[in-house]
Image 1 (cartoon, rainbow, N blue to C red):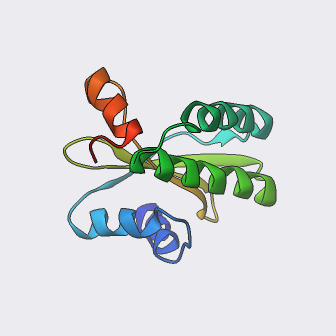
Image 2 (image 1 turned 90 degrees about the vertical axis):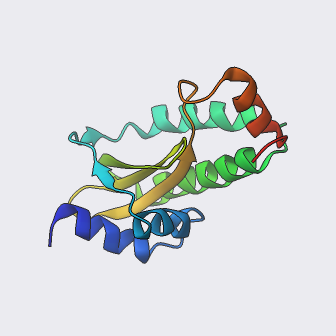
Length: 137
C-alpha cells in the first residue's frame, strides 16, 4: 500500500470534524499531497501558535471561523493526547480556494488534525474578512 493509500484509509476511518469533507473532495477528484518532510513535533510551539489562532477567531461568528475553531481544538487535544515525537502534513487543494491541512504521525499515519484553511494570498482581504464574519460562505 502506498503512503497516499495508507493516509487515505486513516482519513476515511477518522472521527475528526473535517474528515468527511476531505473524503468528499478526494472522491470528487482532488489529490492528496503528502509533505516531503517529517518534523520533530514541537508541541509547545504548536500549542502556542494554535492558541493564538483560536484567540484571533474567538469573536468571529462565521461558519469558516467555527470550522477552524473546532478543528484547531481537535488538533490541540490530539497533540496533547498522542504526544507524538514527529509529525508530517498533507494537503488537499480545494477549488476555487482553500485546502485541507492534515496532520499525521509518520509511519503509523494516525491522523491527529484536519483543518480547512484559506490563505490570504488566495482571496482578497475583504473576502477573507467576510468569510470570518459569516457574510459569505
